[in-house]
Length: 180
Image (cartoon, rainbow, N blue to C red; front, side, top):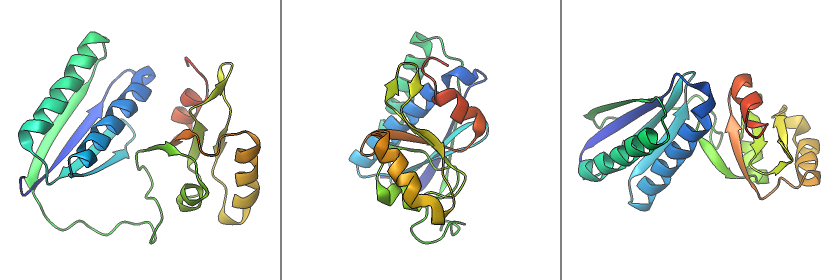
């Protein structure tokens, strides 16, 4: 284990592969957590930043190489920037206790707990489709409207199914339609 943190920044000039970048980033975070490393992902306007701590540098290099091979095979144009620095105390998040910070990389089952932790204005898009459109694609309302929002998600059968949490209208429009 190293006493450093490593930030990976993954982006592409091709907006149509943002979903692929998200999928790869989620896989890196999940694999890191399986190995006992700290991993978090955050969307930025142009890509995804993954922060890793307490990691094995060789294993991380293998993960990045696997991502590069996948990108080459699928003809993606990617930029991957890796920056390591000494481990230091993190600044406190802007979100309140238990709240999800704006831009967090989230790709998990929709639950009431997740919904109540999301900041107002985030977008929820189900990974399940009816034809070419997601069964549930909505903007998160203020807290006082979360109960009707939850019932709408239940009615659409999105509850308990994998969803993407998105932070921009561009990504929302891209994710809500299959093949967009």
